[in-house]
Length: 265
Image (cartoon, rainbow, N blue to C red):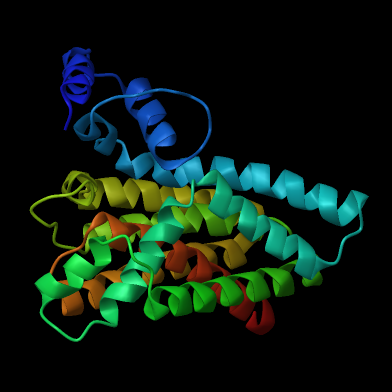
């Protein structure tokens, strides 16, 4: 860390703790929205439970874009699904996608957990990373297309909110590593905070899409827990890349469970 970074970090540590500052820092950290609100990682991580509401806000923007493309420009649902997914990747600054690719590279390594983590943290992109991104992307776009083709648009909000629920689910069920930014978010999550975030997400999703929305949130929970399980088997711990991958997989499982619910309920 440079002397300039140390001074900047110390400056924000000396600032009085503020919920709004922490939320603003979380938005600045995880999106490309130009808030330019900075704070220490510890203060930011205190509001990890708020992430699904940030996801819901991003989802609202995505819904507006999708509605315009569908109802004003009359574009096919497949094109709109692809654009919506691209929008989510872009507005999140490709952070979570990068984590997914790094995760895919790491789990393909035949070696110790330490060797796999080393691969996950290097800058190279391998076949495993490309393959897992392709799998998640094609399932995400195809399921979103199927939902939009039925004539329902609210799952655009639900799936992005559930992506963050997946991230929180991974936090609450994972063991943090000794270093990296991921450990702060994992350590900050408690059962009570997770339950609060889950209740809020379920309530919003139910209002938007009744029980279909609830299934979507539960799909996000499963996606995050699944990633935590894979991480424990391969790395013994979870890193920031694992949390980012959990976001992408959580969104995918959210859409999968919603399309299953739409078919069977």
